[in-house]
Each structure stands twice: as C-alpha cells, then as structure tokens.
Image 1 (cartoon, helix red, strand yellow):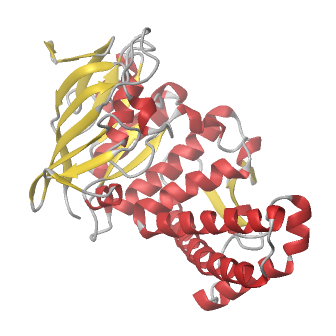
Image 2 (cartoon, helix red, strand yellow; image 1 turned 180 degrees about the vertical axis):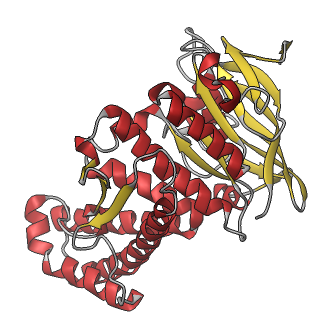
Length: 383
C-alpha cells in the first residue's frame, strides 16, 4: 500500500494551543493527561488534514484560539510533513482572517478534497458512543464518512443530492411549482441518489466482509444492513434503474411531501442497522461497553480494508478516550491489532497506565506524550 506517515506536526492558535510542535516517530502515539489538557484538540488538529469539518464537526472559524476577552477565534494553522513512497509532502490548512478554510499542498493552494489523495483518516470519539441510540441521521453521517474515505467522489454526490433536495422542497412549499423545474430537480435527485446508494452499499458489503474475517478477535461481531426503500442497492440494479426509481418516487410524492414539509422517501431516509451477531439483538439493546466494542470493531474493520487498498494512502487512526471503556483483554487486543496493521495511530486517555498493560501494552512500542494545558512533553522534553 502507498505509505503516508506524519513526521512533524505544527499548530498555531488552534483551540487551546498558541503554538505547539511535535516530532513523530511514525508508529502509535499515546496522548495522556488530565481532562481539559488539550488531548482531543490535538486529535482534532490532525483530523483537519482530511477534507470536511474534522472530528468535532465544527466550522473552521470555531477552531481558532481565543482568550476570555476575545469573542471570535483567531486565524489558525495546522501543518505537517508527510513521508510518502514518492517523497516528502508538506500539507497546511487553516484560516487567514475569514471563516473559510484554506489548504496548501507543497506551498500551492489546493481544494480541500485533494487532502484525501495525501492522507486518509479513521476516527472514533466519545460523541459516537450514542451512535446506536440516536436517530438515523447520525448513523448516515457515520456511514458516509466511512464511504468517503474509500470513495472520495461520494462526498460530491451526497452534496449534490442534499442541494437538489433543498431546492425541490423550497419549490413545493414556497412555489412556484414549475413542473419543468421540478422534473429537472427530481432527475438530478435520481442521478445523485443512485450514486449515493451504490457507494453506501459497496461500503457496507466491504465492511461486513472485513468484520466476518475478524472472528478470532475479542470484539463482538456486527451484522450491518441498510434499511429503507432506497437503502441498499439490489445486486442486479444498475445506476440507470436506481436513478429512475428515485426520480419516479419523488415525482409521485410531490403532494404528500408538500403537505409534510419534507421529502418522505429517498436515500436520505435510509438507516444503518447494526446487530450484535452473537446475541442476535439490535446494537441499541446492548450494554454500553458492548456498544463501544461494536463501534470499535467497525472502525478497525474500516482501517483494515483501507490499509489493503493499494490505490490510495494508508489510513491514520484517531481514537479518543477509547481505552477507558474497554476491559483489559480488549485493550490489549486493540493495541495488538494497531501494531499488526502497521498503521500510525493516535490514542488519548487520562491515565498513562491504561496503555501499559504489561507485555501486551504499548510501553516501548509507542510514543508517549504528556499533554498539560496545551503543552506537550515527549521523553522529558517540552515542545
């Protein structure tokens, strides 16, 4: 697989950091320290090396550091040097006085989508702990992030679908209900929606195959399924057939959608259903610890399938406060899996001892960094 290793990370006016620099060894990185020290902020900075709004889903303007006297965040910057098979690449992102995020690759301006050509990220945060308890919107977003990591074009299709959906609803609820305009929007919804359905279906099938191959690991196996009329694409369905089906359903439901004030059918109504295989029960009915382990297994399956993709850079894993929710056996299994994948990973926790589980821990096999009030200490040296 193409190699992509972060070697140097620099933050300026990002969240709680006025300035910080970190030299990375290329393997697992353990960030430990008290709550509020800045561990998650550092992970978020790394997450901005991918397209999108980062692991917190925040706007670019929100990420800037501000003092209690400042009402708005300062312009901020995150930069890194990435070692690849083709040589060294310099990547930088941030703001320069406006709310819009800018990206530079080797000093040249670039659209954020180009970041996926350089490094891919997989993350798990405490905010995802309620993934199985929240509504379908959060699960669709979770699935779309997984899909985008393997198929960057999925983001454009999803954005085109959402834009056409908003425009159609505006016509239906505010007018004028121009039939030709509605026909065009519904055709566009069919085209973009078919692409979304096919990409999501490929992702779920690939993840299921990966999970099925992980049976020997001490994590609960999940069965994944896309629900809804326009959830999973049937095996024999072509893009043209799916597009026609979505567009036709939209045309037939104009009056119903106008009364409801929302589109009642389409890929935006699908859901990712997750079942605990051994117990044959929905993930939402599992214990908190089992839900965390189920999500972690999906994330590790994603990392594993991306790591074998020879057409794109290997993934970097971000795991925020994961170890504290796992028993000792699963913590050790997590560490062994990260090491076996050979991927760069960032893990956070309040207690260093969580990562030092004897000969099955990360002592001597990871870079340990203490985070204290926005300051980083590596092997006794302040950064």
